[in-house]
Image 1: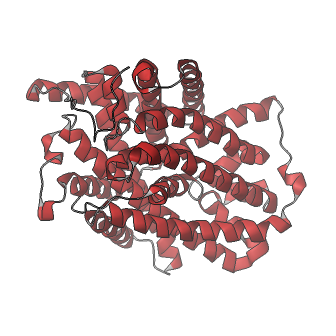
Image 2: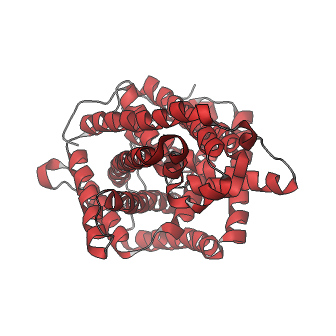
Image 3: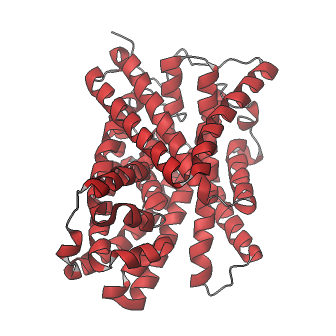
Length: 441
């Protein structure tokens, strides 16, 4: 990026918080109510604890390996150059592309009704193209501009959710929040935990911006932990108010706009509009953070030989071409495909990346620090949740289950073909990253 100024701690926190809240609380809250029922607030607590297990490794490695390649740099150092490492790098970048498309579609879905415009293919496409173009231009201005914009957007979003919580807490019906743990509900609780564990996946974006942060040796770990704790408090508070104010049947019926509907009992139509506007800010901030992370990872991986050199070449005004290509492909996906079914596939891919990061940390703990017993516990926990997610996909969405495994196989095939034609190896900088990688003691 052309700007040399660095983002501070709270701007980095805003990047992660913006992605996490934008990726879940507005878009899939109704789905959570359908799966978990009255246990939804507890699901968010449990999912947050699981996220902290993974964050332990991200924080340890991210403060010592400062690279915008983030988790892929960790995996590269843990596993070395291999077809598997290259395939994971391609999968990682594609998750950002698909997420951008999902956010663009979500923004259009909220914006058009509020603006009183018909949801035609043309109007939807124009809104999708417009929102991607706006944040592509913002990202071109540099990391400081992204951080400041994200900080402002996240403040507005949290303020809207704060109004929702503060005004709604007084009308909560405690009997609607009583948890249930019979055999059926216990199974639903595990399914919901597997689904909503993925609503915390935005904390990893902190490591994808570490080279652009002030004092990353301190701020990376702080930003990761702070973002997870802030988001957990928000999730639980919002879940308590929503589940405690609206019958589950109505929450499930209004699945796509459940939070806006949950505001009606105590705020009326004003609450519906307020929360809908909050959803727009939420999705916009998620778009901002994800486009920034996707462009950063495209550039960093290309620099280290893990994606085609197209991503490293410079173009207009010295901006990385990876930014434009990431945005362009995101728009293409948004215009051509219905991506609702791909969301769970993307989540599964992120969980696999978490597993490889944890295993890499286990192997590197002697060099970069960390308790191997705790890392192993985290690995087994995430692997169990991944198994629950696969079972849930098998039971509820067989195409998504098969597509998940086809995606893994296809990424390996693409990487194998790419290596045959280019004969390149994945590069690792011998001198360390920004001077923050300590020597093994």
